[in-house]
Image 1 (tube, one colour):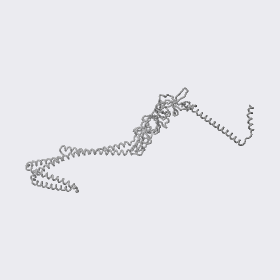
Image 2: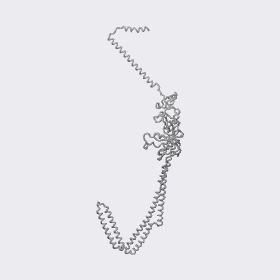
Image 3: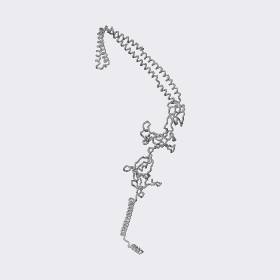
Image 4: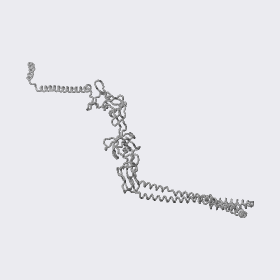
Length: 550
């Protein structure tokens, strides 16, 4: 070995002893040596880079193809039977179911107040007494006026009845003076007419011709009079500006002239035949006119007598109407009612919860409030979106700050048919629409008092002994079917995979939904975050602090 080292060292010594090269050759030699060194250094860096890239590619291939995937723990909940309830929370105020405000509209002063707040009263018990002095005097005056009116009415009716009875008796017995006088006048006129007719009949042959002539003249004169009167009426009614005015004037003048002719003819015939008629015919005519007048007077007397009876009957009815004291009796009844109302009584059995009456103050307005504190209700309001879920008769759980955690049973007793009214009386239709609601307490000795604020829970739906899962555990598959993911064992190594199980949903609460399926069984682990897995994916259940699956 020493020999070999020696052999290797000798050429080095020999090379150190070589003669020095010229400067030009030395530069060329130095450039060649540098070039060789640079090429060797660059080749070394490239080899190192290739090695790094190769190592990185191998690591990526390992991660992608050779290394097993990392499975994150999945949250789950065991499937167990439970009870579900849908609830609505309300607040309200305790009030009496039977509360009466005792008013008075009388202006009398209060003389006495018999109760104070908190007193127990029975229906009909006197709460206060108003002054009744003026009312008693008023009632006495009204009663006196009624008695006076009754006596006056009775006397007036008696007088009218007597007058009517006398008139009816005179008429029935033929004692009516006006009728008797008319009958006598009619009888005398009848006798005179008979005598004149007899004289006329004895000279009838001589007078027939004269009578015919005079009748014809009288008829002609009557027709001329009628024609003249008609022409005069039309002429006087015509307008002077009317084109027919002059023609109407001429017709009127012609009618006037015709009447003059008829009248002169009647006068001439009357002169010629009047002497014959004056003694017989005119006597007959006068007698006939007198008889007709007497007959008319008799009929008038009869009518007057009948009218007198009707007037007497009307006067009797008027006396009866004047004697009607209904209005005065109503006024008296009102005064008597006011007298009775002056004694303020309790309308119901209960407790006096407010007293506004004061001795010496006017008795008008609100005086007392009486409430049945044994029968309590709670006034509350239902929101528009809750009113469809709540029905009368639904059970209610009631709590108050005054009674701690104690729960009182109740039920919904009334829901208003319309929403609360606005100030102008119209139904409120915008903003917060609410419906007045009453809840009746079912426990009489609850300890709750009128005016307390309470919290209530209305159970609108309930399911007992059903499977339920959180809302987030329920998903919908591609076919629109509701499913849950269940962690089921796979293989013999204890591994688990996610299995999609179709379910039918039922009652929904704020946090849970009822499910049912013939593919589920008690204790199945339901994945509560199904969005992080897929059907058939391996599953590792997360462990709770006690070591059980979440």
